[in-house]
Image 1 (tube, rainbow over the protein chains, first blue to last red):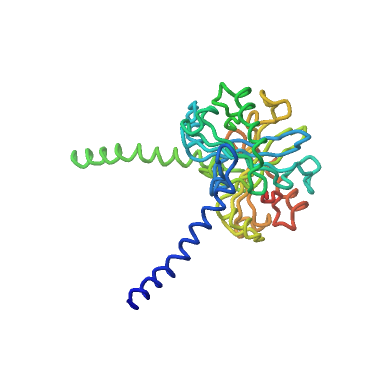
Image 2: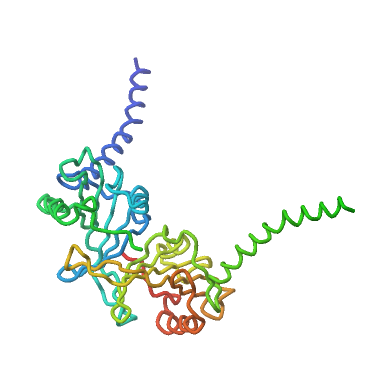
Length: 169
Length: 169
């Protein structure tokens, strides 16, 4: 009986940190997912290939760069529309800042938002197959802001599967 | 004697296409290298990680994106100066173009130049360890243009190992 109790204790002590790790790993993931869509910032996205840079005038006054995972890049290069399920696009954005070395050059200032589009034609059937996430400092913005994504993409980019960014030549 | 002549003919006919291939493979490489520095456009550079986008006012009127190989990215992330030998930076550039969908957005138009910096502290000792290449449509521009690279980098970016671009936050 004592042996059994000791064994049980060993099992519990062995498992508790593990269960703790699971809980810890899951909790932030849920908190970091966008409202409505449940989209998160994909791991390793900064290593993804550049699709195109862009610039946004005032009041946003930003420099931007849209990156894509391999599924996205393959679809762009093949000129394939609609984008296949699994496509992920990430837009990085920074405040525009005067270069300290060149009067004519503008460079990235502080990071502003990270914006993510995930293609899953079943899960996001009501929004053209796309799930949206908009993040500031790694945290999703509120539901009201996320409600604005689809309307704009639907109205202005329907002919290109609701994606604004073209592959830079 | 006839047998030997026939053998020689076979050898020559076998080798000629091969020699032709070698000549063909080498000739474009030399033609595609920058004057003075012998820098070429690195293979696969479009897959490299983004260091930062930038914008250049008129008359150049460009959007730009600087990419780096893994050696470059590692040095940037570690804040390591000078950059180690093997570092390669590539700047892609496009004419600025009004987005057809958004009045406030500017996107890449036609590609203009690809500009390359290669770190080799021995080979390029006379120019701060950097070799330069400036390419239009895959072909290097002339020697006179390449003579302007170093003076500008030396005058304006000496404190950061002659590199203008900072890692975007």
